[in-house]
Image (cartoon, rainbow, N blue to C red; front, side):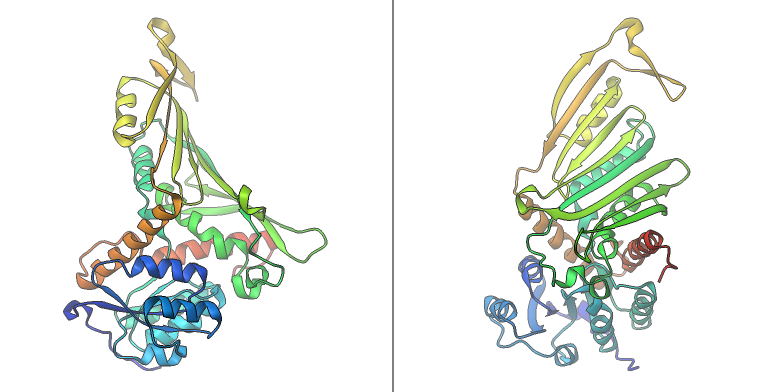
Length: 383
């Protein structure tokens, strides 16, 4: 294995990106990565199919190269991998061995042993390796994190994430349905939400998991699992790819001692809070969600302020609902998260004292939980 040294990005004017694979999402991400100050798209590798050639034309690149040629180029600092999951390990290892930094689409790999090899290769060369888990760059992530940490509504007791996803763009021969290429739904898709909840609640462990096949077809289109965080918080995760595009929808809810928070869309962009609160909690909620609409459903005074739950007495003066969301379209918000992720990683490349929101450990930990859920659903030993 060649021990090439890393490119010195601290002295470079631009971070020069080479991309491997540029289908629909790869092109979407690149258009946002290219807007980050100090970034320049320098090359593209992958197939010569129509989508890749069109993307090359979009960015003014002369041709679509072979992967081996791209990673050896001296004018490439960072490789962005936007290919199906089964290719991540091989292509990331090629890039890392050539001394390139790597950002790859989720999941980091399809097995933990592959992820561990990738992380070790990056560490030996002091290179960046990160999976595109951009959920933690959402301002709603920060607001909910503060809500939990400050215990404004008491302790978190339960949660669920329900993902009713469209399959209109996933014909039966698509790689998504081939477990050898995607890893299955938990691994290909669930890692985003395992990482999101871990950011809020800490390390969890899978205690139950199930999988369903589509009648009349050998396609696994529904999975679900339960994860226990700490001793007292159970969170249910459901992913089903069976809806028309027009009915694609997602909902995430956290239940607290004195209320609940519901987030909508797979990248949360809308929220609703239902709670009983005292004066200080009302003020704290309005500070955390400054643009929310506040509606009062009931007011309490005198002896009616006292209420009970979980063996405790709470003092409340009103029942409220706060609701709101981003004014910008969902895809625009998605672009913000992609730009924020890349800017965060580049800041670390230029100054290693910079504390990143997402590191290689996020990619591994979310994959570990996905592998655990996938294996438990089948009664297998985790890979």
